[in-house]
Every structure is written in structure tokens, then in C-alpha cells.
Image (tube, rainbow over all chains, first blue to last red; front, side, top):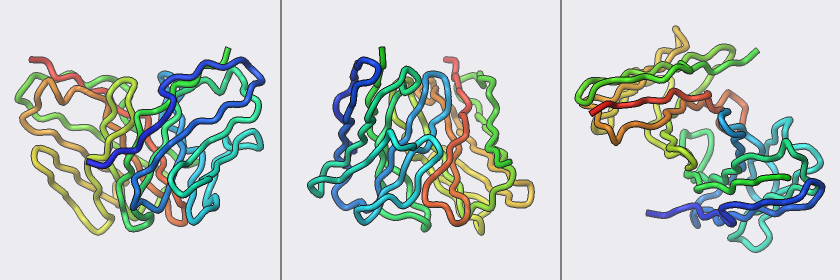
Length: 115
Length: 112
């Protein structure tokens, strides 16, 4: 069964450093998402991406965050200057469509720890 | 304000019984609602989707109902097994939005 692949599985970074989280969505999916989950809290939407541009973003997704699909297969989330409160599990997801009721396929996540 | 509410208390049931989980929402007009399973340290896994014009949907031992008048969905697992122990998340997409919003989930523990 096709999978969404995320790397690395765990990243530790110093506060103020830049991090890039990587994802390879399912090949025939058209919509891509980043979510995060702070330990013990709910899965929160960050950003959705379609046709090489952001289609929607949440209040969490401020100027410190950016997304890119550099080569047609990878989908990356960059946090420019990490803060302690960015520590969370970051999930990438993809779907065939949106609005027609397609389920999302999530990756296994990247656990980001900011120290 | 918009809310998706799931019972935050864990649900403990005996193997073989039916588990029923509740999702209530306010100030949403979703065209459909989805249920996911999440195991500790893992990403959510899609289980079922139900559209606003559907009252009930089944898949193997799973059943979902959707009452847009009550603004509620019920998720049932029949003949539950210890392997069903996980957190179950309700998710919906509001009209005009482009992404799912998740509830906080209900943890199910099935005792052998």
C-alpha cells in the first residue's frame, strides 16, 4: 500500500536554528498538508498546498514557516528560526482530492525537539 | 466559536463488546465528516468518511452515523478486540475551507 514517507524521524535542534522537514507524498496525490501535534494535544492544521502554491494556512503558520515542492516529489516544511514552543510531532499528509471527501494519508511524523 | 468535541475521558470496554465514540461540533457546516485512528507516536490513519446526506456508513466492524440536525457523529466498533485500543479522531472540513480540522480524540482501551 502506498505510503507517505517523512524524514528524519527525529530531529533535535538548538533554538534559533533553521530546520527543514522532508516528506514524499503519494505519487498520484494532488494535495499536500502539514500538521503538527504538541505532546498530549490535538492534531493541528498548519498549511495545505496545491498546484505549487499554498491554498490555505492557519494562524500558526506565520512568517517563520515556509513550504516548498522543489522537485515534483519532495514536499518540505522549513522553520526559519526555531523556538522552544515549536517542539512537536510534525505530520505530512496527502490526498487525491479535496472537497469531495477524500481521506488523508499521513506519514509517521518527524519529532522535532528544540533545546 | 467553532468547536469539535470528543469525550476526553478514556473509554474502557471489555473485549467483544461494542464501543461507541461521540463527536459533536458547533458552528460548522461540514459537507462530510471523517474518522481516524491514531496509535501513540504515529500519524493518524483514515478509517471512514460519511457525507452530510448519508445517515450511516459501515466498513467491516466499523459503523459511523452522522446527524446534521444534532451536529453529531457516532462511531461504533462492534466485537471489539484489544488490537482496537487506540485514540480515535473525528475530523471535518468546513464549507469553503481547504483542509481538515481534527477533534482532540477519544482514547479507547479494550480489555481482554
